[in-house]
Image (tube, rainbow, N blue to C red; front, side, top):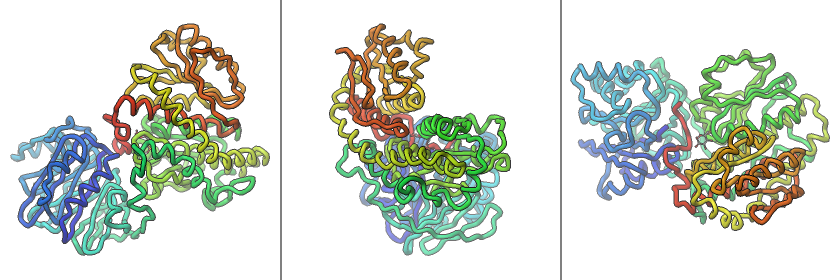
Length: 606
Ligand code: G6P
């Protein structure tokens, strides 16, 4: 999953492309590159590391009115300048690629035999040479012929020195949008890259090719027939993607959660219930039928689904399965009658989640729902019932506000299904009441900021940490551990507290911080016993205690009191201090909080 951007204009496009790459850096940031055509010259600049390293290499005089650019997350070939895109063929074709070409080896062998020289280890360079091998003056025809031979996934943008005012782009399995300006046109992996230059976008469909020049564009379907697609005006603004006064995007996004949750609820709940329109007109019919729910997601979104499983079984009394998309998509699963399929994804572009949805034998399910944060994403465009989380752009690689709004959205889904199936109205009213209180409670919890910053110091020199939870707080412990490992690089594991004695207890000593969230629920006493097991082995406890969850703590324990007492929204609230803990540990360890090593925000490869 890489980011690509391309432009054809009258003016110099180098600054537009570099800004586009900065905005796409969440998709990968191990190297970056740009190719520009200026009159009769095709020039390329590439740099290892982030987009800034590339920007530093380009002199202010460097200009070009046609160009393509790329920020990489390495798949084939290590991060290096020579593997960085754009890739050239015979110094006239330049190409950037997001995705994976699965049959590149056989194509490469053939091209090698035909005399093409390869300088990189990438699958992408093969495509550049393949297009060159078909090029007879018309770039569109050459790209069309070449992509017909490719297996795998790709978003491609190609330029050729012989036709300096034309750019050809295409997509299969990887996202690509066309941005329409005035006397200038663009392509990019997503709209955020182009917000400074346009708000008019066309979302290409699977297999589409587009030819753009300064004044015009033409889209072709996979069959080569010209086609027209709707032009959309996005409401996103270029400014919505800035850090403001915060030090990191992640910090800003943690602090935005009260608003994000309020946005997510806006216009969707009434005094005691959820409005009928939330999931669209067809939802009531589908929800009445549901007898079982299958949730599929990845990463943090998977944890949101896991929390929802507990809620669904307790509130709705319906069986619920949750599985990571990369497993689900390749497994033969048994689908009981009237199963509802639910996907959760911040980006709506995660390859495994999308594939799980695309490969679904829809006739075996009574319907499908996607919970997503990006309105323009593939997942949203390809799902029948959709609920937008409305968290706003999330830039930090480690997901925060997307997660809490996913949990809120799942409660909205549960209440909507419950309403259709005759769930006790008082339960619905209780949940809705708690949802209403949530933004205020989140704001209160964020006041723990400085206290948690101080506690984080204890973790800075640690190599491992254990997170424990019971019941619905087990997936919250998983999310807490994921957050810590993602951004601080401390090895962190989550365990259901009752499993401690079956293995992880062997790891507990004075060097192992053990983080526990203690809700005031039926499992409190059990959890308390597990905590004693830790203390008896010299382990140090860091307890995030909900109101009423009084513990006989000792001086050695660090207890952070959370002044909230809820029943249904408890896991959402418990997430906030765990996010702050990870954030401050990472800051104090000096890691790259927003762009942790080896990771990317949107994983569009499997
Ligand atoms: C990546 C991100 C995670 C995210 C996961 C799933 O690993 O770094 O933060 O949870 O992808 O992404 P999705 O967009 O489908 O929620």
